[in-house]
Amino acid sequence: MQIIISAICTNGGSLREAIGTDQRLEKFGLRLDKMQTPGRAPGWLKLHSAREERGAINIVWDAQAHILTARVVTRRTSRPSPIVGDFITYLLARHRSRIRAITTAVRE
Image: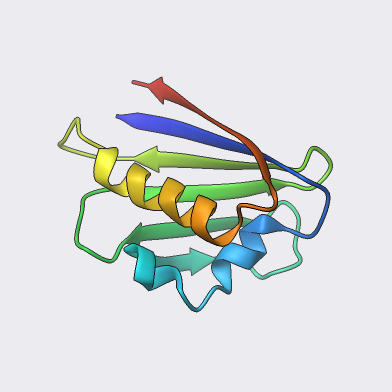
């Protein structure tokens, strides 16, 4: 199962880079797995659960549209809610001032 999370943001720097360099990421149950070199476009980032929940979050940043897109992929389970909840909680706790709207969509 896949869930797409889109965050429409205000003008500013790359939210993907801000997430990738955030030292408090593990406090929210997330850990950085891989990140393309910061500053390269298009860039990407991969997060996993620090709490051993199943799934991965693949993140891209569209600098022109100021949209962060996260694709949550889970295998062998239809319950991506723990990792999705951790990610949305993180976004609202650490980057609330940049976020205008968050939308989610299920893709099977």
